[in-house]
Length: 232
Image (tube, rainbow, N blue to C red):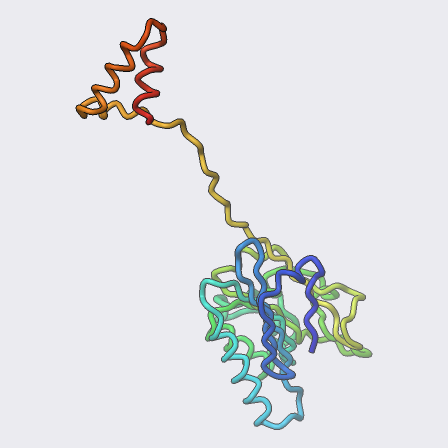
């Protein structure tokens, strides 16, 4: 299992949590926002049931441990087909999947519902070649998915398979474009010092003002004298 982080974001990595050989979470801080990228690899057909249960438990634990205010993206090989169409599952997916749903695909959909997430790739209409994530000989399937919180779905600009690019012998690269709005920093506005006119009501300040006003024969602007005195 691998998780590639672009070089420009390598210094943004805050924490790397490797739960097991199948589940890992990388936390990044980008423009003041915390983004959790979870990479997961589900057991294949033929693995023992105990291993499958352990994987689901580990993934649930990691997802539950991410604060709601932080962004969460899951990139996983679930080894299942969510299928084409979305009858009854509109809250977590759209109809641009591939093939018919199988048992493991139903588990992906159930997981998305339980965690209030969305199966991102099914929201974008693409040619079949840009939906196939696993290709071996004449067999073409869709088993790799990207999930995000449903409340952040509007931040996803695109998600597709790069035809011809492989990250393993049979698996093809899935890319997802996420557009985040950086937090605006408030600029301090400098203002001129206020003239404390009310201080003239104080006896001590009033006496000093009269003395300075009558000092010498130098002619100055009255407003300047008052302002200078009251700012002291």
